[in-house]
Length: 328
Figure 1: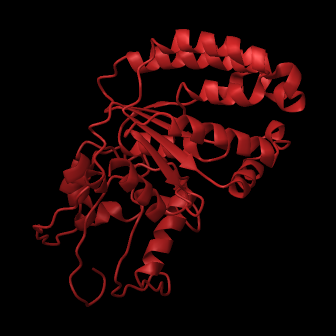
Figure 2: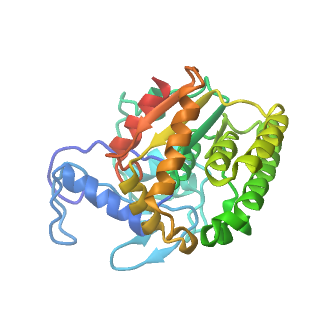
């Protein structure tokens, strides 16, 4: 359209992303570049191996030199409007205040479209987690368990349970004076984790496929063993086992292993002030506690995934490799 060349294959897709619009655009340009796209002079139409446009972002409206949303030419292009109507004919254009099906009926584009027999398959069909009702993702401080849990919950329509550590008033105090605040910290975490897991996991959600949590109840016991004195730990352990009987067990327990150097880098990068004093020896003790717990379980539902050389947040390939290990 707009020049002499070969036919194009056109399609529209609906994507959910945690990225900002600007970051989505960066990702799109990177994909085009990898597939051999060379951007020519603005306004000059030529053949290209791939051309990805952002058409709509919810009801977001923006006009700048780099990104204009909604796409300013979409209402003039039947090859855009027709596949959009196939996805969501009732979606309303935020500027024209007209539904996509209405824009398709009114467009002046008289192009003849030919429907193709090709189908796009959702990649999540290759990573079936439907057999799991409850997934627990564990790891040391800074391992990335919250990031993985959030990403998986988004991709697989799961109910997300995140540990409420930010609300714990003893945590900043603990990192300044561990001996004084260890017991009240672990007791408060024990009570909060018990209440959260009991309420959120047992509360059935008809609109979610499963539950994914970024911690498991046994985390309390692992950290307490490292931080508490012997007598305190003995009392804590009794209370834990009394409470733990009522909690459901995860169908799969995922432990994200990272070496200490990477953990310290991640902790520094995320910039929580009260965590900056964490020492390598403390992280090693926590890691040893997890591995000791896992070794004594003799349970096939436990999966240890070494992510020391992976970056599943930035690299999709690494993320898919982790999913493969989870369902494999």
